[in-house]
Length: 147
Image (cartoon, rainbow, N blue to C red; front, side):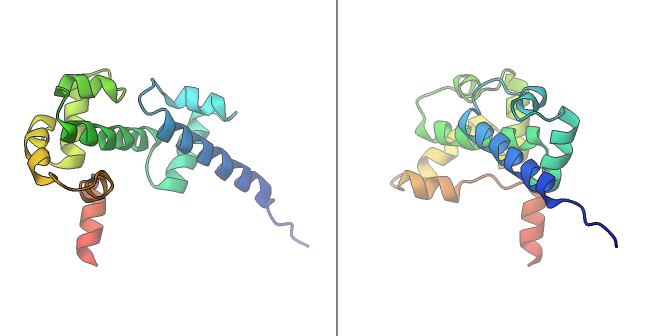
């Protein structure tokens, strides 16, 4: 008789991963790193990173940066903060890294986005503009184009 692997540890890991993802969604503006996130759910940083990538298709850092960029897009559309202020407001500590990641995800630098987005979404309810302007990763855009 062969024994089956116990599914409980896998379910426990999925619950932990969900808690990590929820924490990143809530605390995106806080200084979060994989070690701190892993400690919070009693996992090693390496195990958390591997399991998170397997479950969600991207690293914890990549997921966190996407949340930060989404929030930055909303703040830039609002138009009352400078790009530097937005960078720090969403939890980034380096304007250069923020601008690079923003450009990678959105396809244009934050300053250009700020200029164009304000007029493009004028009059739209915020819930609609958030969906319309959601950043799309390059691999997601390629796979959507193939369907």
